[in-house]
Figure 1: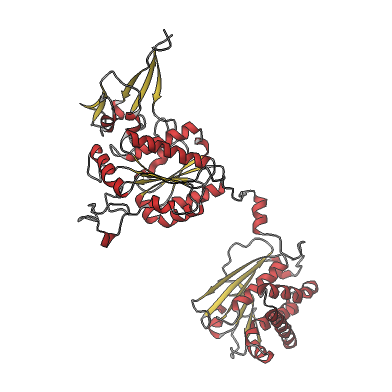
Figure 2: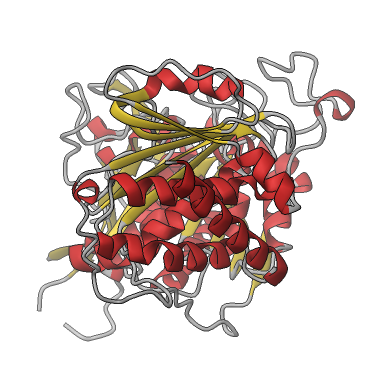
Length: 490
Length: 79
């Protein structure tokens, strides 16, 4: 006589659960009769049968199955409550060849993580989700879940769920099947052996769709929680088959597997050189070679802050200066900060220019160039000016001469008045840009760099006001005017 | 032996891996499983197999929530 195992412990599980604390290492931590164990077995069996354990990631949710990574012999990721879909998106996008299994309960998927889940389903992410619907919050002690039935008594609905106060149970399978992207949606129940075999088929199909990279597959599993439903396992199966399936009918809600082609998304790269190339990309229309920028000041990080009223063009001035750095092939950052008002509130932006990488875009100290267009900004940001920093301000609005420290420079130009005379007060920021150019030319730039100023400013203005030819022309003229006025004043 | 020998099966519930939920008892189409009165290491009465008649359908295996509490063996007479 010879005996062979026909049905036995699935190979998708660890042989012993070494990660599980305590002396019991062969069993899972679930209560007697819990549906999690049944579904875990179906998934473990399918993983082993398909030979995909080495490229599968099982995402453990928050809930009773939080420790699923104790049991499954594959990669495991435990995510915060409801974040399964977000983590799965990252995993499948970063590793398109991997098999990703999401496993969520009704609290995790249908309440806290509902938005993340629906968006992932709608994007048709390449992974499969097993949604354990037991009509109750299990791990936390039997509170009402989004899927609790009408009239169902729970810890938080002691008189029974009432549609007028708590709404109707969410029909997730029906909702997901209405979306365009999902490939396969089925609702099954872990009750009778016949139903469990249907669930087994659904689990295998969802994983196969994932292996074929056809997109989003979803299986809702009506599962029992004998402890919190306060029933014996046999009564619980009856409750599911007689009560739950009336509101949550079993069956295939959507299956377009046959007509869908594999989903192909751009393949990501983790090569250092490629990532750097993507981050510090070649300049559009700019000089492809690294320009020398041989002035002394470009040999270190230049930290610039610009402050004024919203509407004075504070943010645009920063953007133009950042674009100028870009056109000289320097690394730049631009960080705006403003209130909710479009006009009248205070606004500021920080610009950093560096030949090397920029660590943080924030400028709140050691500022090299502070440009202020109103009095409140002067008071607020002057303390941030560095030891040898330069302050440039609009003397048409700031009448008193600011008290700068020894070593610092305060340079004034009545940019507001000049812009008004020029014909458009809105150009005060471009006048200031020209003034900055004249100041830099006089004190800091080599002749080679100075010669590039006007050309670079024009390219940057053209980029920032792209498509508005009149405004571009006007700002370029205002910039030239500011340059000349400042040059004359210095 | 001829090739037409009928396959036989044996169901083995592992006493110390059973939590006594009784799902297999209701699942078995031949009513060959029952919860006994003895207690296992977890302190629960565990499922017991009557000893013969298993048809190898797997109903008890798939309905059991524990990974390896039930094993079903296929018995082939040696040639």
